[in-house]
Image 1 (cartoon, rainbow, N blue to C red):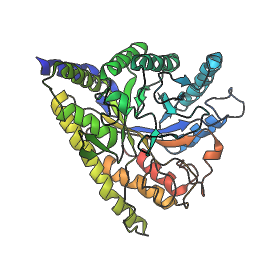
Image 2: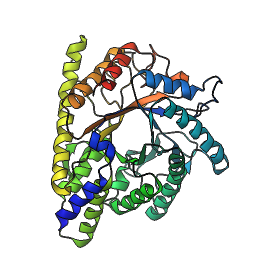
Image 3: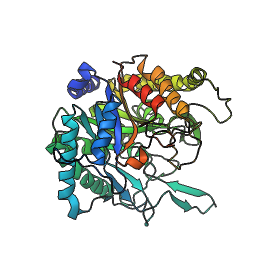
Image 4: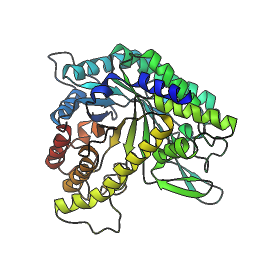
Length: 426
């Protein structure tokens, strides 16, 4: 009976987009300072956001992911603070409408992905804390420990309400209910022993709530980070893979526990997984080690990087098959973030923020995307559904082309050519 219910859940959850399997060909569009999401009236000079959308379209992309932001000023607090205060919400809705209308007019689809960052009270980051043992802990959205989890989820829901409304009014095609919230989804028991399994029941409620607000055709997602961090349990080291590996561990290795309370939590996690239309993967795995000799020739470099990227695609393939064996659902996967700075060895620790440090290298950026393409796109895995890369900024100061050491591909001919190849793949 249980297997039948799981299969019925899977059949109900399969969206039309997955049945035809068009690959997602997207870029994340991010705001910066006074450069915000907006579009001008027809006939007026284009806004910086419209220019950025045009640049994304020129890459061959057909999907734009918008990333509204909130902050937490205390990693153990229970409140999120949306970037736009209540007094500015009407203007914000109008801005989003103008830009989404423009994106749609260009024949492109839109994803809404509300995210938040943990910052110091003065708004800066990283948020670091000196620990009693003399070590330093860096807090980020993936390891928060709200003092009142119930209140935190209520605050998180209210943050989503702002963008669920905008998404509904403007017929957004994709909605993401969370990204990289490791401690809140599947738990990090070596860091937060009070809640070792996270809160999958809360996420299931949030997913169902968000789905009730939107069209049934909207692709509903949660984004899981895939990093070089090891997932540990009871002091034992498991495979690298960060939050993604922990999802696999929770769903597969701890399947069908004898403890009744743990069984209820596991069932909630299975239901949450099955009711998502797809999972996003925030792909920030190193494609080489600092000790590796780096080939000078482009083809040799791609061959080196492909060794690791093949390993990662194999890890995802195996993990998804294992998860399917206990959930009854072949889950679809889309890269929601995958990017590399255009610096020498930018394929090592690619999650590093744009510090401006490093020597410019377009070859190393393009070769990194090339390796991912050969490992994930060309094998035509049944679960693979494309990517939304990181990132193009609304701010023209972040899209300055040759010499810019950031993530943006704009104005970098070799990277542009590589992305056009990826987006042209069917």
